[in-house]
Image (spheres, rainbow, N blue to C red):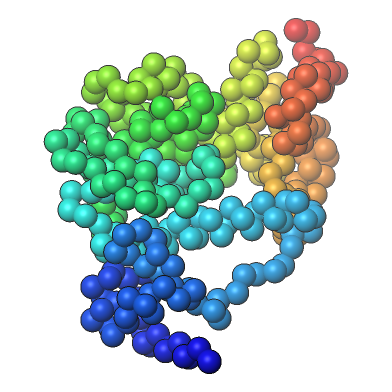
Length: 338
């Protein structure tokens, strides 16, 4: 008969070092039990058996639900892991690239693997351990800061964007840059919900510092950035529209009726032709409150003489020709002669 496994001490941190385990009376043999996983050498994570996942599904179906669930779980796990590992981070190391983007609440694009991105400044030697993507950086090419609430060491938003240059295609690099400099404007006003993480001038200074991997892509991205894109698909849509020879499009545009009542704010608008483009993200289809607001908004638009083209992910990413035709047809119907 196998010996029963001793319960773990109460109040044990979710992530702990080998030294912390030893001081808590946890043996090396106990660390090999399935309720503890080894993150990397000398660092372990406790698995809480009572922690369950939300099994609810969005209204739009299983495929979207599963994707959202995986992405959300991965993000939560990465943030918890980064927070815990930061307590045992080797001296002179800090989080960078994708892990830094998560910590700054910026978009992430790479595969959902479990490795954390860390770095050190030259001439220090980077940590080489399982569970980490480590690199060494020229001190001129990165600014390291401490997050206000957690005290975690991380590259600042400007450096984080620049360090993605050798891992992201141009469109995604622009979308990430848009997120860094985004002005979260309160509709109907010029006030911002909160300051941007950085300004375009900050990104320009970072690019001008010196050569790095992906420098040409950074230089390509700079003139394409905008403070008015609220999401990655909106950035991608803006880039898609630019070479189509359309009238000038306004971004983050407030739509009013004849009496001056604010009807809504559209991501893209051709005001002269009263035509708006709206990207239909997953939230628009899976959250009842958002769905109801959209119905009311588009009804008001119609009554005020506006038309809205609702852009799906399929139109944006696989049927661009169809989207272009829809926009041109609507513009010509509304008086455009191009």
